[in-house]
Length: 234
Image (tube, rainbow, N blue to C red; front, side):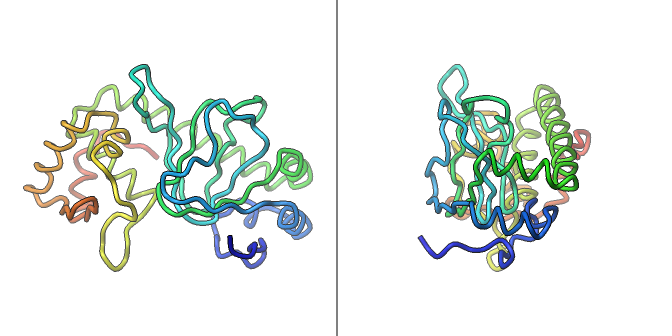
């Protein structure tokens, strides 16, 4: 583990702590926080674990998942640099989902007491957290609503739009910033690997994407967005 990065010198411009906390609390959180490094597929927290605090992604990408009745993972949310993890459990004792690193990821951990004090002493921080909660809840509700209406083509297209929005594109290779197996893409799209395989072939024939093993280049992002234009999630 490399030396801890202090909040004031952190390059994560989207971090809630850095954007909305006073300098006093920025230094306090910087002092008390722990930083942990996770490799791809490492579990950051597990369903049933006791909730001890809040996680902030300093860099990397994470999927928040819950097993469905068939034992398969259902992706609840994707998160990347600057995002918060574990906040949905506030007020409860245990996590009811798993958080798994999608790539090499560094996470800052702030215990519940320090986090609560920061909310109480920093109204701007607390207010913007409320706005974040409201936005995330609305997006989740819309995604659940629309997924029940989408066909397979639309579900896979929406998964690519979502992955692009949250995890972004490698500026050099022009591919998604993550290597995805068929199963991982199926879990994100809410479908099966077999259906994903057929749809990927169609998208490639239509020159919407280009595949090289597990790397996927988004050739026509507007084309993918047009497929799900009737399902606007913002």
